Amino acid sequence: MRRCVLAAAAACLLLLAACAQGETKAWEGELLAMDTIMKLTLYGENAPQAGAAAMDRIRELEGLLSVTGEGSDVYRVNHTGSAQLSPDAAALLDRALALCRETDGALDVTVYPVVRAWGFTTGEYRVPDDGELETLLERVDYRQASLEGDRVTLPEGVELDLGGVAKGYTGDQLAELARGNGISSALLNLGQSTIVAVGSKPNGSPWRVGVRDPAGEGYFAVVELEDMAMGTSGGYQRFFEEDGITYWHILDPETAAPARSGLSSVTVVAPSA
Image (cartoon, rainbow, N blue to C red):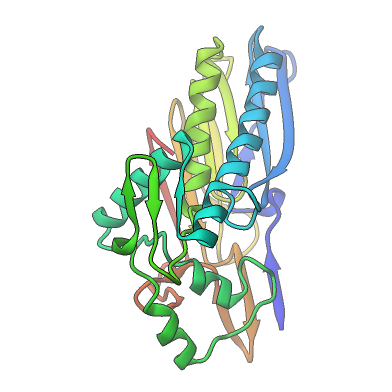
């Protein structure tokens, strides 16, 4: 069996054309969080303080939203069936459930039992048989999650996973924090799938971000960003191979198996991550 989990340095998002020498001095920070390497680059007098606050905010949100971290809001509700959520977790779950409705279940935050069965949260990759997948599908339906205020309740066997939206929410929170600290130029690289640009580069030109070619090395497109967020996802980011078949981490809630849409990579640019 061949396995692949791309580090941020080789992921779909590659920062291009870093600020040239002589431009405004940058504050840079890097940390491992949410199962990826994140790199923050901020410019301005308050950049060190804002950067340190951003790093703390990432750790705080990871502690609340992790599906595997004991003590997180998501972990508690998955193991008790009902829990009072922090303001962040409640706001994100409310938005995520709205996205589930808007996409008619193409995004489903209750798919965690399926993700775990394939081994994408543990690294113990395997191909579940049809009977197991059919049984697991009975537990996948976002409409079974009841959120009233800050309390969420789940039926027995149903489990949440906010991993599909947590980094986007984090990116929005970091951008708001940076602007609140007087930062008008920053690039927030949250790893394999999410980049948020605050303003433009210090010299006024747009940030340039490359999209990795899913069929090979290098990149096949460059996106210019100013006060926008960019997200890329593809089957080449995290996958394993067994008996000559590639299985990737993007799962179809209707089949409980890797999505077979014919798309290799999708990039979305929007005001909100």
